[in-house]
Amino acid sequence: MGNREDLLAGARQVILERGVAKATARDIATAAGVSLAAIGYHFGSKDELISAALTESLGSGIGDAMEAVVDETSALPLIAGFTAMFDRMPEIFASNREELFASLENSVRVARDKSGSEALVDAVGQAHLGIVEVLRKARPDLADADLDAIAKLEFVIVQSLGLLWIISPESLPTGEELARAVTAIASDGRATVAD
Image (tube, rainbow, N blue to C red):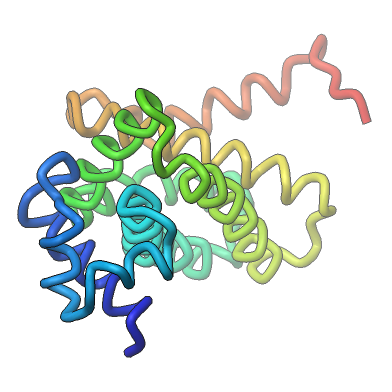
């Protein structure tokens, strides 16, 4: 691994051990086995490094798990895949518990002082595009506009469910409940979507 990858790994280690608020640049550099100056060189600031490390960690944990569900359900009707995805989210969140907590802590930190916001804003766009690509591979028959809309919906629901899971895991709706709501909205004869 190079210094950049070592810093990402060191940041993840320190964040999971101490939390975002207590992660110092010195601790991260020590865990990574690199100089303190390497943080500025590769990421610009400790805050940008923390956002990048959390994004990568959640992308590989939650993102990879979601991709596996999409792959497993690609032969099913789209609504059945949607149901399966959100039925599995509590398990996926539990497997990525500490990363999810750290990500929430980082999001609040960025919202308060905007440090690290560039990496976080970029991560949101990348997450959406990642979902589009996973869906495109599993469901090549869907139009680009539909892929984009589904990816945005899934991203928003996952973000919301992640926060709800942290606060009250037993309050999460099931995939069936979410699918029922989407189906009811879509089948409402009064509903129209502008092209």
